[in-house]
Image (cartoon, rainbow, N blue to C red; front, side, top):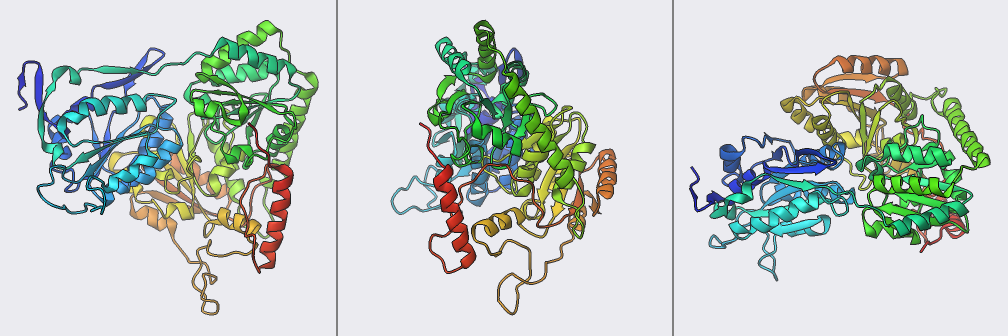
Amino acid sequence: MAGQKNNVIRLTMAQAIVKFLQVQYSERDGQRRRLIPAMFGIFGHGNVAGLSQALIEYGHDLPFMQPQNEQSMVHTASGFAKANLRLATLACAASIGPGSTNMITGAATATVNRLPVMLFPADYYATRRQGPVLQQLEHPVSMDVSVNDAFRPVSRFFDRMTRPEHILSALPEAMRILTDPADTGAAVIALPQDIQSHAFDYPAYFFEERVWEIERRLPNPARIGAAIEMLKRAKRPFIIAGGGVIYSEARAELQAFANKYGIPVGETFAGKGAMPDDTGMSLGGVGVTGAGSGGKLVSQADLIICIGTRLTDFTTGSQSAFNNPDVQFISINVNGHDGYKQGALPIIADAREALRALTVAADQAGLRPDPGYYEEIGVAKEEWQELLQKEVFVAHPGEKFSQLHAINVVNAQAQPGDTIVAAAGGPPGDLHQLWETSNQRNCHLEFGFSCMGYEIPAGLGVRMAQPEGEVYVMIGDGTYLMQPSELVTSAKEGLKITIVLFQNNGFQIIRRLQMGRVGVSFGNEFRRRSDETNRLEGEYVKIDFAQNAASMGAKSWTVRTPEELQQALAAARQETDSCVIVVETEPHRYGPGSNVWWDVSPAEVTGIPETQKANEEYVQTRNSKQRFHY
C-alpha cells in the first residue's frame, strides 16, 4: 500500500499517472465529463513492469482496452474524440521501440486534424546503468535521443520524463493542450521504462479532481463591425463551413444566419454535416470533391466567409477556386494562424459566439438577402440533384454496381443517429459529394491526413462515444487490407460496427489521378505479375474478403446489386456483433465533376505522349486559374 505522510502520497511514477488521469474532467457550457475515461495499450518489456502494474493496482476507474495494433488505438482515440466534439479522448500506451513508433502515424493524423489524443510511448533507461537496452536507438551525436523524438514534429506537446517528479508539470500541460480548441492535437509524454517504476512523494492535492474548462472565446466587436461592412458591400457572399462549426456546436447558429441572409454554405470534409442538406442554403461538400453547384458559386463569390476551417488545398482548389477578381475573405477561427489565411479579416473567436454576434449586428444593420441570388442558389441545387438522379444513382449497361450508387443505397437505409466513417481512397470524396446529413445522419470524415487504416479503429472510437444507432465504416479493399485486425478488438470489447467494403480490386481513386496526370495505369491495382512485361499487369488477384472478416468474428455478406445491399444492411442492423458487407463494384466508375481544380504536377520532361499531353493541360490550367490571396 502507498503510504501517506504530511499530505504526500508515495507512488511510482506510473501509479501517479494512472491516479491523475482518473480525476481529470472537461467542462463546457456547464456540462462536465471525464476527459480520459479509458486507456488503450499493448504491453512489452518497456512498460509491463511499470504501467501495467500501476493499472492493476490503481486503475479501477481507468478501464484498460487491448487493440491489435498501436497505430490503430490512436485512431480509435481520434474517432472517440471527434465523436465527443473534442471534449473527451482516450489515453494510449505502448512499449519501447516499434510499439511506440507505430503510434507516430496516429499522432500525425490527430494533430493534423486538430483532435486531442494522449500518448504514452515507453522509452530507454534514463539511469543508463544498464548500457544500451533492447530496442534502444544509439544516436552517434546525442545520447539522450530516442526513437520517440520522432514524435516531436507531429505532436502539439512532447516531453520525456527522466525523473518521477517531472509529471507534476508535464501532465497538467498535456491536459491544457488536450482541452485548448486552438492548440489541440497529440500530447505525448515519453516514459523511460526504469523511471516508470521509481517512486516519489507526490503532493496529495495532485490527485484531487480537476476540471479543465473549455472556454468560448468572444469575438472582437470591432472585427464584427468590419465584417458587417464587408457583407453590406457583397453581392455574392459564400460561406465555407469547417469542423470548427461542429466542434463548437454552432450548427443552429450557422443555419439561422445563412438562411436569414441568403448566403449559400459549402462544407469541408471535417465540416460535413454542419449544414444539413434539407436546409435551404446548404450546398453540401465544397472543393475538389464537392458538389458542382458549390464549385460554380464559390468561383463567382465576391466574399468568402470561412468558419472553423484550415483552408487546405482540397477546399481552395489549390488556390484556384476563387475566381472573382474582387474576392475578399472573412475568417472565423479559434486559431490565429488559420484566421489570418487568405489575407482575411480575422475574427479570432469561438464559431458559435461569433455567429451569434454577427447575426445581432446584421439585424441592427438591416442586412437583407438578395432575391435574385437566392433564386440562383435554388436553381444550382436543383440542377445538381437532377444530375445525380439521371447519371449517378443509376445502373450503367455492361457495368457492375457502382460505388456511387451503393452510397445512395446506404444513405437511404440510414436512420436518425447513424454515423458513417471514412478517411482515405475513394469513399471520403464520394461521401463528401453525395452523403446527405439530413434527418440526423452523421458523417465522420478524416481527410486532413487522409490516413489509410484509420477507418475501422476510428469506427470503434465512434461506437464507444455513440452506443445507439449504427456506425457504418465505408472503405475500399485497399484500405481494409491495412487494418482489418481491429475486428478482433471489436469482438473482445463488444463494439459493433458495420463495414461497407467496396471490392474494386485496388487503389482505384489513385489510378484515376494517375490516368489524369500520367496517362498510363501502373501499380495501383491488385493484379498478378505478368510474365510478358514483368509488371503487375496480369489477372486480378482473387481475395475472399467476406471469409477473411468471418475468420475474425464478423458476420459477413457479399452483394452485387442494390437489392442485395439493402437486404444485407437490414440484416446487419439486427446483429449485435460487427458486420462486413462486401460490395463488388465497378472499378473505374467515378463521380461527377466539382468544377474545382487540384494541383498535382505531371512530369515536366517525359517521352510518354500521354504524360506530355497531361503536362500541357496542367500548365494551361494552373496559369489561368491559380492565384494567391494575401
